[in-house]
Amino acid sequence: MSEPVESFTDEEYAFLRYARFGELPPRVRPEERLESAETEVPPGRPDPVGGESEWHLRAGG
Image (cartoon, rainbow, N blue to C red; front, side, top):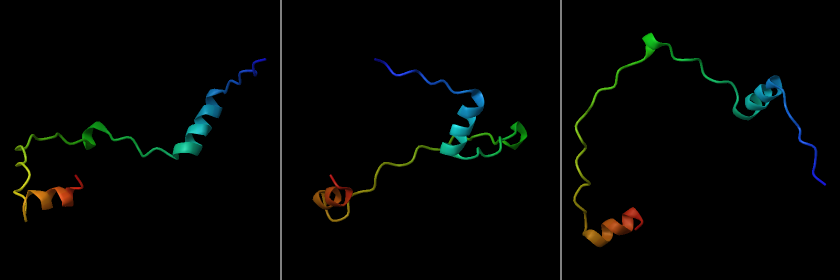
């Protein structure tokens, strides 16, 4: 025997979303948005201090 399928209304789904996630922040208006600017690629990781084995110990690997 299968259980009956329960269907929620749109209002019930809206309440469940609110109960789980809270209130959404206000929408950002187009005039409040900023354009992104490309930047230089960050340099590689720094040279290991104290030797390669110590670097791996500090990095957890």
